[in-house]
Image 1 (cartoon, rainbow, N blue to C red):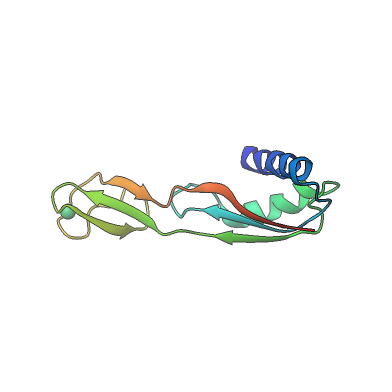
Image 2 (spheres, rainbow, N blue to C red):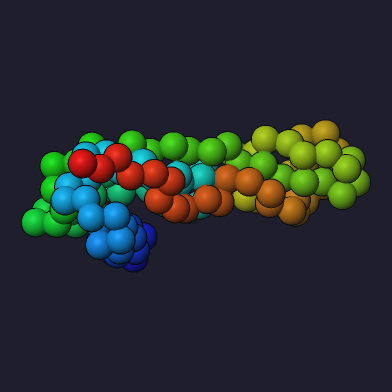
Length: 110
Ligand SMILES: [Zn+2]
């Protein structure tokens, strides 16, 4: 829920700063390695936004691919989980370089 609370906070701050009254679309960026259940997030979104400036808003979720850097191969590869070995040499662990994003990317407001 803390991501959602943070999201509401960001929306409120933006609403004050920019003077908009309603949020039409919220675009979240949730990396595949962020450990967030996207379906649960969608479910929580409705409950959390009820009665807020984002009530009834559309939720869009972008899920950047997980990326890991291998020091042996000096290459970055796509990975499904943060414990995946390097697909080229099998080394673990890789340095996670992408897919852990968890942020409000954009708001479409009116
Ligand atoms: Zn490697």
